[in-house]
Length: 443
Image (tube, rainbow, N blue to C red):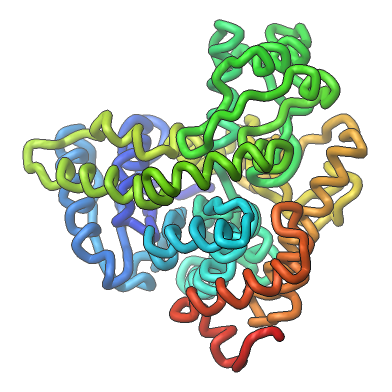
């Protein structure tokens, strides 16, 4: 890129995560000539947007940065002339997340916001909105890069690749968090540890790990099996069985617990729901406290309490990617991109999560050793679910939606899938106009 001053548009600017993003921009002033940050949100998020904008302006003033900070409820105005469009929104807000987590539990299925039936509902709400944003970018900022942090990130990126011409890369904080946790286990600097990733978003594997040229994959597996911290704030840390990890031979991400320890994770979710409500309920309390902090006129930096919200390393994951594209770094990041042969069992145009070289032309996936067949079989089944979900979301196709749920390993049973689908569509009808026009339920 030859741009000498950058405009960054943040869609979902009223998010409690935004101060983390702003801190990242300010820490990289010498690397990124950001001169304009435009925060945009919807009418329902107006109050939060105003609070975040005021805090952002105080942070920029404290840093003495030459950056204009603006806010708008006109998304097109924010996108106009942007160099990077960053998406970080939740259609339906945390109340929709509450439903995503609660409804599957009624059917004795995992209730998680990005994985299983909950992630499915979120994808149905989110994909049409993202594609609408893409149409604005195609018209108003055709050269912009869209960096998507909106979950379920892999599914959303799959939809963008198939149904838009926007230059996009999906990203997630899970691989960065895995890198940080692994470096703590080995008592080394994160930069000294090279880890290769391949899989899907929230279903990614470390296929190999090297510390100063020495392979340490088995050593890391042993430490995870011994109980070393290897989870996210939003995932219950059910202990891994060391014999299973040794047999696996590749390092699973924290979300694999839902697939390999389903009963234990489901039992914990049910107990937590009874005692404290859904995780969304807990996040609401955390977020309310954060916004009370954000309103304080004396606050001019990211508060440490934001770490309790989850989303660790969000800023590094996103801003390091902007740096790599703008400055043509050609360094390695873990992103969601087209497969291009990395996972042989999947089509080349299927979106996967993997290590990739990032420069001003985008992402070039890095080949990995062939994945074990038992790993590929899980990946292909979940990717089949993702591809069906994209078609269901775009076309309002109830048959594809049913197939998607029945295909997902965390749903499976056809009758449960059918009941779940009818329930999810009814509970989310205000956000699913593509389905509302189709009357009735699946009998």
